[in-house]
Image (cartoon, rainbow, N blue to C red; front, side):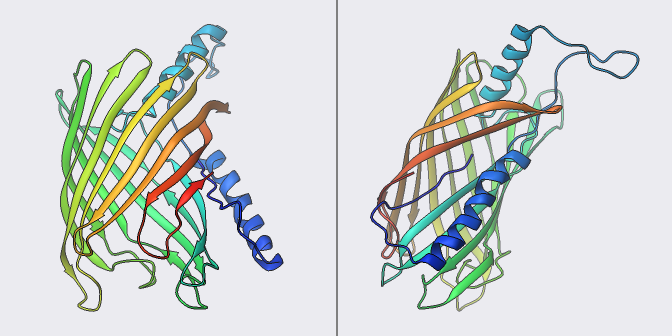
Length: 291
């Protein structure tokens, strides 16, 4: 999934345009490399080749995989990449930031009744003129969630476990440099071609440097997704964060996300885009509709 975040009224110097073009190429190419991986269907012949399945069977298989990608607790290996651009940052409103998040998901069946899912978020950021006339590039803090979920469920699917904030940041202006821990949970309702639910977590600092602020942060992500028989997915989400230490909300609405599951060799890849609207954010952060 890629999301290009751009303020239409922004005036961008030629040098900035050249930087944006280079990063845009990365944003477009990255999902084609690692967006999602799922096993292919169909039995293997004795000579090692895979028989050609009927078109309807392959379509149904693609639609099923596309719908599983909208389920945070699906027992399927995937590596989503999210990319976005932010403009009008910093006191002078001339700051720029590009962020790419790799979010590998790895499920493990630890017993006949339970799955354990590892969900990792690894952000890489480049920003310019956000803090004075300076540039920073590198890793931000990594989060690791471990979710225990029952194997056999009906229409209500749930999972819960711990979440860890790991201080992998390579620059103090891109990371809290705090180690944190807290609870996380997912609950969703599956019916037909739709998935609707909520992912939530809270993290507290348990170790870190005195020069960096204490972390006490709640995150909530309600979501709704509908997948068609042709493996198109239409979704809406909201990413809401409350910083208890600073008393500040950040609320980002994705009113529409569209993606399509495509086949690239033996793998299935999901590519798409989204509109984002920042409803509330801290000072010097972007607000308004972006795409």
